[in-house]
Amino acid sequence: MSLDKDTVRRIAMLARIKVPEADLETMAGELNNILGWIEQLDEVDTDGVEPMTSVSDFRPELRADVVNDGGDAERALANAPENANGFFVVPKVID
Amino acid sequence: MKLTELTIAAARDGLAAGEFTSVELTAANLSAMENTRDLNAFVCETAEKAQDMAAASDVRRARGADLGAMEGIPIAVKDLFCTEGVRATACSHILDGFTPPYESTVTTNLWDAGAVMLGKTNMDEFAMGSSNMSSYDGPVTNPWRAGDDGAKLVPGGSSGGSAAAVAARMAMGATGTDTGGSIRQPGAFCGVVGMKPTYGRCSRWGVIAFASSLDQAGPLTRTVQDAAIMLGAMAGHDPKDSTSVNESVPDFEAALTGDIKGLRVGVPKEYVVDGMPGEIGELWRRGVDWLKDAGAQIVDISLPHTKYALPAYYIIAPAEASSNLARYDGVRYGLRVEGDSLQDMYANTRSEGFGAEVKRRLMIGAYVLSAGYYDAYYLKAQKVRARIAQDFHDAWETVDVVLTPTAPSAAFAQGEKMDDPIAMYLNDVFTVPASLAGLPAISVPAGLSSDGLPLGLQIIGRPFDEETMFRVAGVMEREAAFTAHPMTGEA
Image 1 (tube, rainbow over the protein chains, first blue to last red):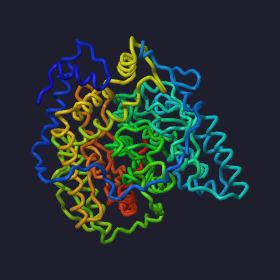
Image 2: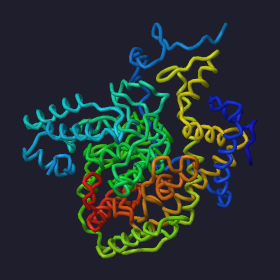
Image 3: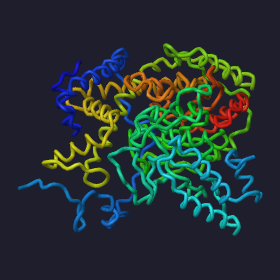
Image 4: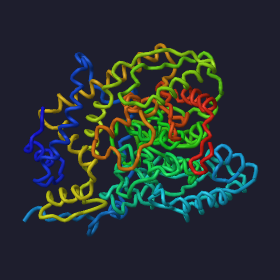
């Protein structure tokens, strides 16, 4: 599998990162290098192997379903680039 | 002896005997920080807070209150940890000015144990790197040099500032985090002890996330005993992290009996890479001899999937990072770069806020998780990860610990390997397998290269058996008798 410019443009959109048109080729080259090196994984026989999603073999405990945090809008908003009336402010989405 | 030269264990005794106060010990470290600012190990100094915390510790001691395991000991904190009221930016532009309104569990535990915070240390952006060169706050200079006129060297990464601070006697210990080697490799490069506990031993709550199935906090210190003391204060169950294990924390220091008679040490034949300097292999063989002479039984083993650990890691870690770092969108904290629309604002913020290596990994992560490629890449990597974990599982049938080199080279010059991501990734070739398997592992300074740079050996233990790992590490430290000092040049 080799990435072309269109695929890199699509991935960049998925990752919400702007890659200037002029840089797409270079970026494709870099990513292809890494993915080419990763493809050695095809040598490993993984037939019948369960994918490993966690190293822990213990079951996480369930906590009581109770409110134990929150109600502190001021602290939650303290780091926001823009806030007003207890809300985060974003650019207008609907005209 | 200068106060900054003391180990944590010796400082603990000196404080208990009333030979000096925490205020004096802290002042000595703050002054060392001031004198070595050119290394750029700290990105934020909290001198006032340090003095207050030290004074409070001295009051507790004078009052005869219950004292913690780290009582009065000044330490540094990696900038990845959220610290209430003190910046935490993961050394990324995108978290500019972020001041957490809460404290991470690991640092809370340390302050509860009496430790004193000196400041926040430099690191690779979002812990993605092995050289500290990707930090938005600039590179860290390793206190070690190859000869008198040698080039400035990297401290390793991502916990490069923490390792440099401990090596340069600016802090008695420092917190680090390790996702694929980010404590152990800088430990080796800076000639200090770097320890990554079993996944689940330390809470990840309040640690800025990189790859959640791999991230673990751990200590960087100048001795194995200090690592045991500090880990004891960091670890423990935390209901706020569902992957933190609900088991009591053993007395790690008590495990340092100095006796490894009859313990079985595995030496895996696969821990060799092309172009590795001969002296790394020689040091490894010396390590084997030291443990053998101390009464351990050496067992040649095979961990057949070792070479696939690094490529599997470079699917799994970027995939998890692409999910974790989706939260940086210019809305709730950090940098915002305005745009024509909401989507445009997101993309502008992320393009300007993330550095080149982070962007590269987010792109890889988005790709391997995208429709049509998930099975070929992500699922395949998870299956290979299972194979690697099984290799270790099988090894534990015949051995108690595994001994390997920590890194395939000594510290390299700042700027080297920057145009070749894969060459940079290879730094972690010996540390990533234990990360993927979630195992405890420690790097111990064991010797000097022909250029006079420190080299480390790694001991990997069974899950939640840090005690045996520490015991063997303690013996290796004793046998290696590593006393070289980066600041005085004394060997």
